[in-house]
Image (cartoon, rainbow, N blue to C red):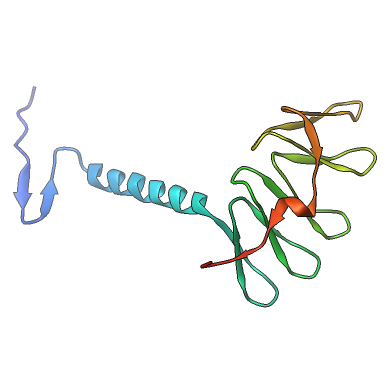
Length: 138
């Protein structure tokens, strides 16, 4: 087995027997920072140029106004007629054209082959009242 030279310290830069090791750690640290900062708030700019943020995802309505889910793992989506509705969990549209969501934060919704909708927990109707509109920095 070949003998490796010990690590060499040169000023503030440390070289090691594993080339690229430091770059890998930096990349992982930057990725972690990106994931943490993007999870803090969802923000979108509205038609007037104002930045609106929410606890969860945000969406723009037909007029360019921004509304966000009030829960981190909630849903905010644009309806067929262009308005924004929000829900506690994931949402879908029924055969009747109603928008239903799981009442569990981040809960799943499944549309079955026959068109029936099943929700994790219970199903609840999505609504604009479940949304929030908070200008950034407030």
